[in-house]
Image (tube, rainbow, N blue to C red):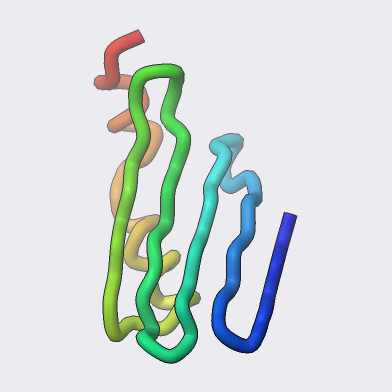
Length: 73
């Protein structure tokens, strides 16, 4: 799913088998990357003053699978 307006972008996609939601407010260059890690865990990176693609690159530097393995089941 992807929704883009002049003011905001919202998308949901799968990356490395994990469900990822992204939000981005254009004028503020702000938003969030949210990764579903399981029924009781999620990874969230919020950002301000960062380009949309750069924020995803930063979020991917974290070991999502490692965090997922350590999360409660």
